[in-house]
Length: 296
Image (cartoon, rainbow, N blue to C red; front, side):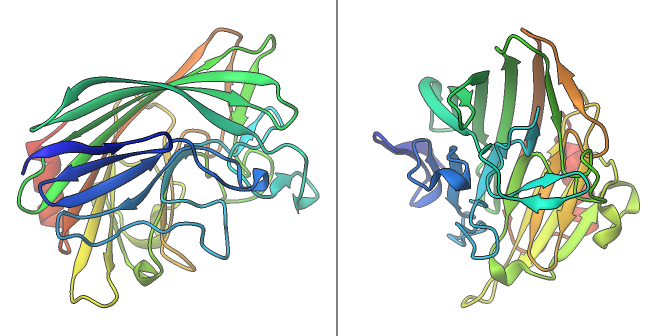
């Protein structure tokens, strides 16, 4: 299938595979400050046209498709919504930051591959510039049943003091280590199947390391299923999976689940992931075959 940038305006970038718009990347979003304004991918579609993301669900309005974010950055919340405070629980604080798009640079625009780089800046609610980020998106391998998104990020501390990146778990809440690249699935994906490397499956994968994790869900209205396969890069040394299939579908390869990551001024955190968006319900054999055939 031929890949192409089908639209690029002042707010969003759209990529298509033949006649299907496989994702919209909203890089200048319009949303309340409490929701942590930042770029997001939604809708994300399979090659059959089925949507595998959700936008602004009522239970967590700051969840939007696929986002790169951070729940705890030296007391600042770039995730959106309420903040977990040790010995207090979740509270509303004036600490919800924003991630601002600065520029795009394209190196491939199809038909076999789309590749572009984005530069962003991270600002606190008090308008303090804390970090700069460079993201690289590569869209490729669009065949009859799946397409692939590779996502790389480099987050650099531009603050005069160290930045300590963590999660609700590093602040005291058990098994809530979410931070980083986050996918929220459709309502119909609730109670979907979770499979991971080394024979892991189901809710037991929460908080565990694994080379890959897959989520299989069913769609409403059409008699079809879809699979999302997330691959962790070997250089991502601290990844533990935050994953749920109830009360909603979510996957997050957390870079600070149990332990904080500290960036000195000028230091950078580099992360890389691959997401395969596939038609149909892939079983363990099919997933392991893909990983073996297309390793990092």
